[in-house]
Amino acid sequence: MKKKLFQIGFVVSLVFNVAAIATVGYSLYFAKPVSSHKTNPFAAYDRLNLTDEQRKELWARYLDMVRGITESREQYKTKWAEAVQLIAQPKPDWKAIEVKQAEILEINRQTQTMIFQRWDWAKTQLTPEQQRIFFDILHQRIKSGELLGEIKTVQEIINKQSANP
Image 1: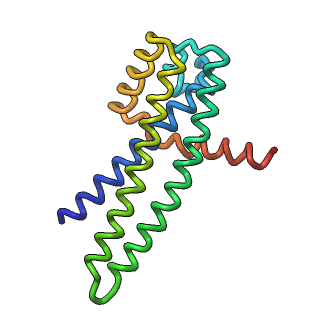
Image 2: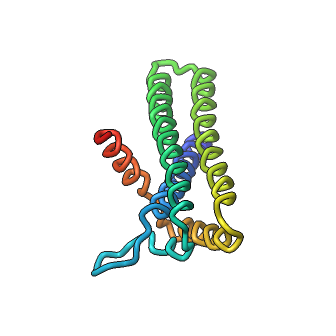
């Protein structure tokens, strides 16, 4: 039961971290005023008043990070599938399962580190006031749950850019 709760907590943590990064990066590049009846979920980032140079630099680094997260997610899915195969055995080898679990946790740790390092790097691109606003926005979005699901949108953008060189 304890292992199951740990696994669920791990998945929830990964989803929140990935969604947070996706939302921040997407909003830094595509933040536009709210128009017509469509709500712009990234309108809050307009408060940063980014210069074109800041927007370009932050977006480029963000895309690199999303690519890294995408690769990590593929590794993550593979490791989970391998763990399922181990557990499905008539007499599961719990030592091997624990090794697989450690591998899964390492992928999660690396992904979180990538996200945290990007947030830290973003500070080098922002003025002190922009940094304050940036982290206020992150806190608000994490608390409200608005950060979930945005990674898919950015991945679609990357896929479109790759298809149209």
